[in-house]
Image (cartoon, rainbow, N blue to C red; front, side, top):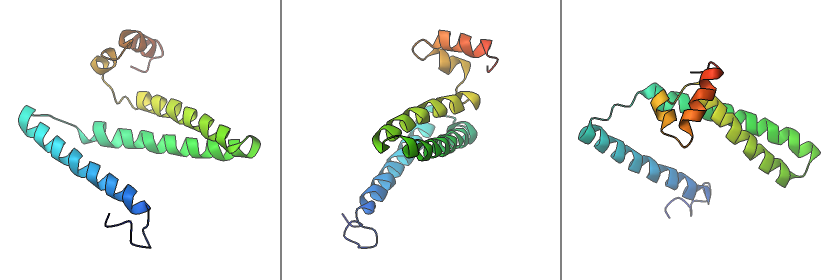
Length: 123
């Protein structure tokens, strides 16, 4: 409510405030978990690798949208780009080995997924 009336910020202020709110809530939750259950989160596994995956996904989806929007409607290009983004993000997470064997096996059909990843010599 404070940022939106500022002409230079406008409606974007609501988005920035929402992000700030979630960052504060996340910080409080992580701090509490670390103290309470001795949660040990490695910076690389929980920040760097997912961030790198997001960057790869964003670049791929942005350029796929640019190329597709030239040959098909913008709505269809958006939908296809979102699907491409999901696939690219999943592949990036797998390629960067964000999840351990145990974490993959806890997923639905995790044992089957892990067997495929082993056959592809990713894990």
